[in-house]
Image (cartoon, rainbow, N blue to C red; front, side):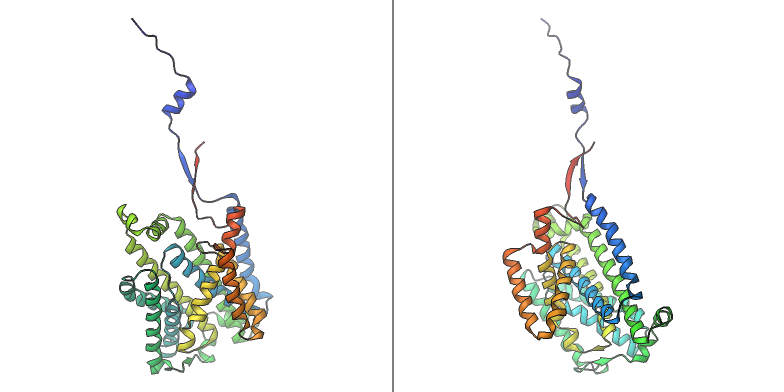
Length: 364
């Protein structure tokens, strides 16, 4: 007895012989359009000193430096799970390194900015093995205690002004690289030309920091960092070196934060321990920016820093009232928008200018 074979349909045969191929996507049409718009905005901001007043330039220096600090804290706490309330340590260390290099060693201020970042990274590398023994709220408190210790050390160094601080003379600032070129280009006085130069440096730094963080969180290392944040034990079980990744992130963030601190106090030209290591100015405001805008988003800190700048600009005349408004606004948003303003917008309307999540689709 024989059984005749039944021919298999061609479509079904193709499905069996050709397995389904899935493709991982991150970018979208909207994000690619946003990239072009963002490039145009950066070019416009670079050309803005041609027509902008000095007050606007100084305000934008504040916006750029605070945005850079917010993005750095966001990647450290949001993606890395390292909730630090001691990031003002690296702002202060970077600023004091700049002043020491310029006043004591005779460095050009522009060249001293990366040196400030390197010193902050060295200190972070030394503190890391101690602080990483702590987890969660203990890590947060430990970072704050370490910052207070560094503030007290800086206050005891007489060559750096002790507890009263120190200044950089106008003569030293007028000789910094690029100032004379800006003076000749725009016909400005040395102080205004210095502000324009610092403005360009701050714009460059915030663009590099934002793009570097965006590229990092989209990479395999970013996925490994997120896995170590969500479940470190499970991540280690599949070969993720959670300790090394978080330690490297800690040091790199300290390096960038130190450079931001150097730029901030290069523009101020005056430093003191209490101001340079202020938890309100360099950590509380930064946390406000990230929480209001949206944790673990690139767009959130951009929205949050503009909101902070507007509140400070229009409410500063009422004294400490703006602090009350900031606190009340933060509480309301955390209650009704726990994902932050941008996080809520992105979830409700699926709008992502800097998409970091991945999704699968069938390959055609």
